[in-house]
Image (tube, rainbow, N blue to C red; front, side, top):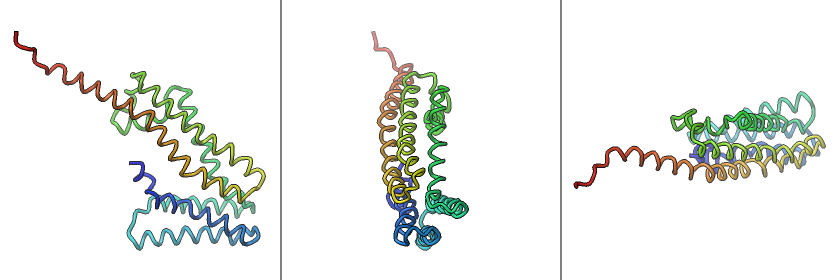
Length: 212
C-alpha cells in the first residue's frame, strides 16, 4: 500500500529529480538563479512527458511538478536561491504542528486517518491499546518533521543552497520511509491483537456446549 501511495522507487526518484537538477545547475552556473530554475522546470517537464508517453500514473509527478513550479516562482520573485526550498520547509512546519497538536488534544492524527480507512473513524479512542499505538506513532512523525527542520532551517538562514539540496534529498524519502516503517511496527501488532480479540468474541456466542 505504501509503495502504491508514493509511486514506488520510480516515483521517489522522479519527485526528487527536479530539486537535484536545480542544485547541480546552480553550482555549475556559478550560482546563477535563472538557469538553475529553468533546468529544474525542464527536468520536471521531461519526467512528466515520459510518463505521459508511457501512459504511467501521473499523480506523484504532477504534484512534484506543481511544487517545483511554485518553488521556482517564490525564488524568482525574491531573487534568493535558498527560497527554492522555502515551500518545502513551510510544509514540514505545517505537518509537524498538525501531528503535535493532534497528540496534545488527544486526537492523534494517525488514529483519525487509519481509523477512517478502517471504517472506525473515532471508535478506536475507546480502546487504550489503539489510542497509545496511534499516539506513539504520531509522535514518530512529529520527530521526523522536527529532524528535517532542525537541519534545514540553519542551512536556509545561512543561504547554503548546495547543502540545502543535499539535505532535502537525504531527509526526504529515506526519512519518510523510516517513519512509515516505525509506525507500522508500532500499530500493526496492536491492530492484529484487537482484530483477533474481536473475532474471538464474535465466534463465542456460536459455540455449542458439549453434550452432557
